Amino acid sequence: MTSRAIVRLLLIASLVITVVPVAWMILIAFQTPRRIIDPDWALEPSLYSFQELFTADAVYGQQVINSVLIVLGATLLCLVVGAFAGYSLSHLGWSKRTTMGFLAGAAMLQLIPPMTLIPGLYVVMSNYGLLGNVQGLILANTVFNLPFATIMMKFYFDTVPSELRESAAMDGASELKTFARVMTPLAAPGIAAVGIFTAIQVWNEFLMGLVFTTGGSEAPITVGIATLIQPQEIKFGPMAAVGVITAVPIILLVIVANRQIVAGLTRGAVKG
View (tube, rainbow, N blue to C red):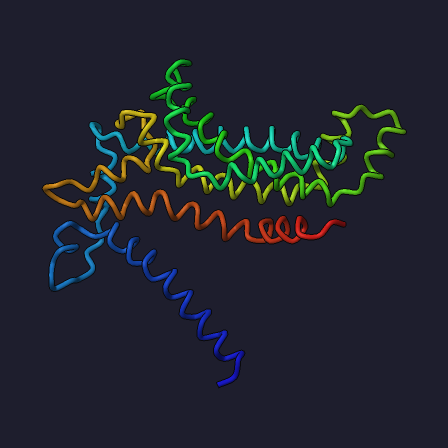
């Protein structure tokens, strides 16, 4: 067997391992509860699991909205602050020691287990009244994802020639206008890649939603999923349904934005 055939078999196996669980989850989500546990399994399409999630007294709909708001807020903050910080480190003449120290510190923050920082962050958020609300979770997620965004932004802005900034300055453009109209559009693929990665990280976050809220309508959907596993029963149908709601949009986003992600990663790999 040739090496090319082995590679193809490995890719096919990886595809099957990835696709089959997702397809099975979608299939279960649209089955009736009786058919899910029936030994003589048969297809009986139903929206029962989704209807149970979004009944009038259920909180899962509000939790999905909370997660969307948290993702939008944290991703936007990381992109804006990260872009300014990355541009500053790349083009505003910081010393090499300062730049390397900042990047090393940001990288070290990514290596620290989040649980070690949660107690201190809990106290700070409690003092400022940020517990149990979306605003607090947006800021908490921004704190944990901003170092990664800043590091990546710095590398992407490194690919934009400094001569363009100097040319814009000679034409009378302010630093802010140069950043917004000249440098940022050229780093757009990298910025888009950072936004997608940040959104995925925030969407999948569970620990902070569990610790910083009391559950219910205050929590993100990742916390709500855990409530479907109870001592008396495991609600397989609703679990599959909420999995479809939370996982499939992210999968589709990655598929649609695949070109942007690859362009952003390859552009940041080598300085132009």
